[in-house]
Amino acid sequence: MMETLLKLSPAQSLLLRTAARRPDGRVIPPDTLRGGARVKVLTSLLQREWIEPADDGHVMTDAGYAAIGRQRPVPPDDVQPVDTTDDLQLLEGIPIRPGTKLAALVMALRRPQGATSLQLMLATGWQPHTVRGAISGMLRKKLGLHVVLAHNDSGERVYRVV
Image (cartoon, rainbow, N blue to C red):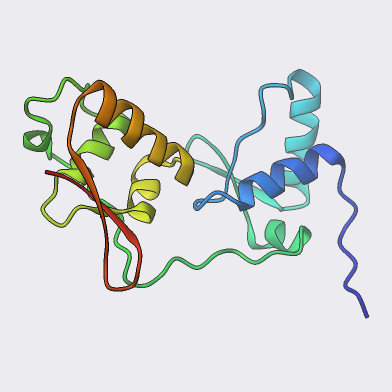
């Protein structure tokens, strides 16, 4: 017997499916969804308890994942998010404004152990392709940093600035 998914509008489906692909489950409405339509979609998702208010927006609930036939991803036990407190010495000599996502990226990469893709995603809130693009474009090409890629014992990518 096939499990029937709940009736979702195209906008609700889009918001939930894109949020489910983010590591933190954040709901970020597209710029094309404006005004009353945006309010109506977010209100309906809140009323059904598929999303809940978070710091600067909304995040998916377990019921939201279930509504699209998914489960909330469980972060691996051995992953510690990158600590971004008072590491300004890691930014010395690099023209980046402290407190930005790019600064968090550089601080993580300048640690002796480097950082995995997942740690960089958690530190910045970016998707994997955005992290890789920032490393390639901004750090390597524009700032001239020498970023090396290695693989750890479990096969994850580990980036470091040398």
